[in-house]
Length: 127
Image 1 (cartoon, one colour):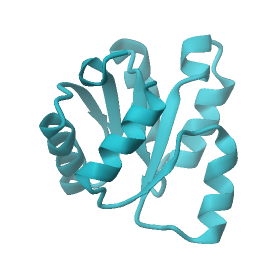
Image 2: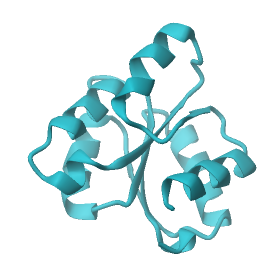
Image 3: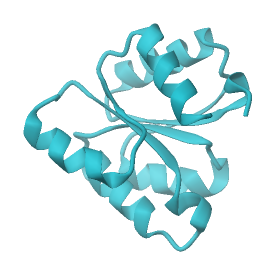
Image 4: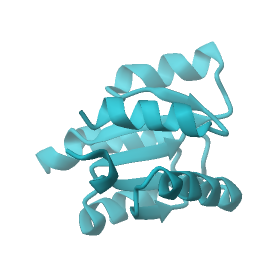
């Protein structure tokens, strides 16, 4: 898949961070972008938007990023079940990483993401 044609769902409860990530993606040439403010709204967006990749925060309420990805992995639709996910969080603690990494994701980005790191992680996931 051509990198710039990717459909990306950005999930973050912080409006400023969502806007920052969306603007960063646009500067990288990605324009098919949808946003959600928590895991529950992201699950609903998955069905209508059909993203190629999800960038999700971990610490959100009422459904956090780990719970969201756990729900994806249990989903009946195989495309949703195998969705490519990259976690984003300001929390890089060992405890959080131990919860996040076994969920079959394509990485972990410490927020705020630099354009170079964001591009590298996206290209790796979208190969």
